[in-house]
Image 1: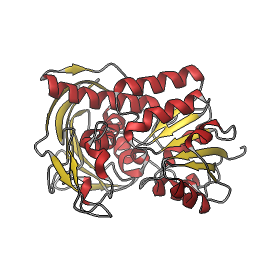
Image 2: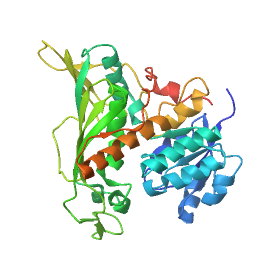
Image 3: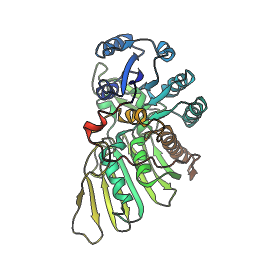
Image 4: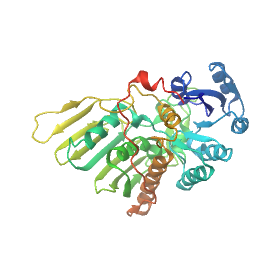
Length: 369
């Protein structure tokens, strides 16, 4: 047990509130500085965090008292901020995706390794009781040998609710790079790494209309594919089918289903920490609920950073840069496959992170550095 791990936060947009709600009063973390391109936003955020100072991005990266930079910028800026932090000798935890391109993601992980610092990356939702209970069920043999899975994310698009949705439709955005990390990370936890992909994609609308906020009614150009689907070949031979779309109104499909020789698991939405895991066993008459058996109970965004800070040298972070790079490799390979019309083999491999034991909320919220 030591002093709290000192964190500086770069990027104070919509998602930052969820992280700050988790981290602001956690005994393992001390938020000492915040930075945003909007200085007034930085000042307002710092005013609500005792001991935190509003500073420029450059000053935050230079501060000797910042041990980890929590990078919550837009995807196009992820690599620049992460690499700047790494070059300053700081650990990084970055919002998903790890970077907008595979070369930038690879540079982030490789430069961190050379500098002797850690990289962590969202999503940490897959460390909650939903995905982790499903993984424990698979590892425990409840469906026999896993053979296949499906993962589906369909939404009309984030312009309906986000006041500044431009980056969702710019390079580094789109449904796959935005939402795919949740589903692919979950599939890696459930079935292991991916070795190759086959993809298809479309972009059938040239612009989107902002549905809320001060820019209501403004049009945003669409510069990326908005419906991406494909097949993931896992290293053990299982096949997953994946659909991510900003082009559908609704779906009745389960977020994730895993099919095995003796049963099927319905897995809750990996965009959330919890949810009901259900099992239909071969020869059974109906779906059965699997009680929570693993994961951080009542998890919230930022628990992946707490997991990394409190891991020390005993184990790698469960929401680590190696998993994030593999997920980025999977996503960019899918887009390449769609563009080139052929099967693409991945260039990365990864070990499944350690299972999260069933950890009550009061326990992980009391973890110390």
